[in-house]
Image (cartoon, rainbow, N blue to C red; front, side, top):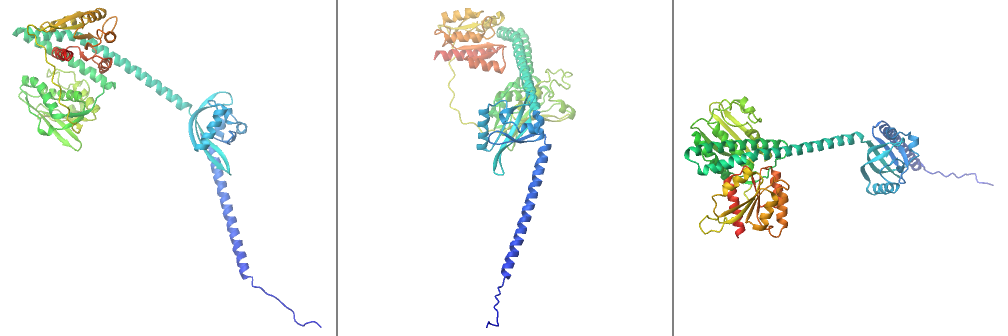
Length: 545
């Protein structure tokens, strides 16, 4: 007989239900995040497609084999294909400047380095060529490496570059023509002035008291004309960018003393007192010494010219952080604000004509350009009826290291009896200039002058006589001075003779070319007789060592 009882087993599944619920919630959350991420990717994809579809730049994607996998409408329009036609092509089909092997190597380089930007040319469907700029980078898309390239048509950019290059070349040709014109004008103006000033100086050596006064007028007028010529040519060179400066540490106080000494005769003639600069000027400034001297002489000369009789001119130096201002003050009539605004304009002379003051109105304009070339500034302060102060502001410079003691100057030969004359050969084709040289050396008993009016004769005299020095004109007929110098240097008999260039070509490039060619010195016409004799004595003293 069976048992009246049955067995029932029960198990608590609360934990399982809780875990199942948690898993279900986690799955639902994960599915939600996947849906959200998918939607975000779809939005990004649509946004990317929208950007690529509407951008003006072309876009294409290629696989590592160089086959086009995608392209936007702009790239299709650029090359004249439909998008479907483009996707049947490879890079070698559209690339003009690279062979298939070059394309493969370029793709490998981009994959290795990750990015590249370059200019190239693409071939359109109709066979025409378009210049493009390509920016390409490697990306991984669904695990597949692709190269994304953005393409920009640079036809207009290249056309603008060609126009700019053509304009630059035209400007360079214009500058060269201007430079040639300035050089020719300098030569043509200086050649007659050489005779005027040279013979004027010679006349002054033996003139009577009455004649001496006339000679002084001739020489003064000639030098004034030379100054005007130099100022006009300097201003033209500055404005055409052909005048350069060589900034260095310049001791200011000695330069000021030198300039005041040069201006003193002009000041004495007008009864103007020149006050000595104070000790605050004992500094070094960064400037081109020659050009700074030109600036200071112009300011000091103007301060004398536009001063009142028995007035004064003073120089002051005001220290500023890293700079110094050089102030040149006069006790003249002063200027109005309107006149000050016009001062640095070329050929602006204010009321100078009415006051019969010589000049062209170039000096201050040139001064401004020169100071700016040296990295400085220039200005004026003036009070009507009191006077004016012109200032130049330049950077301070550290004093240079002490130089080695200068060599003693070479002994100057005397004309005493018994001295054997040294031969100096002058090769010059202009008869007036040749007579001037003969007149200069007529009183030098220690020098025997040889002259030649043609290059060939000059070379023959040099070979036969082997003079101690040769004065050589540059602008000779048949062969210029550079060719003559080359012949002299090639000959064993004449290669060691010092040669001094004497020329009316006074442009900086002319001087630099002569130095590079091997001339021992360069003298410009109109000749300064004292300078010529100093150079001759220096060369003869050097040759005698």
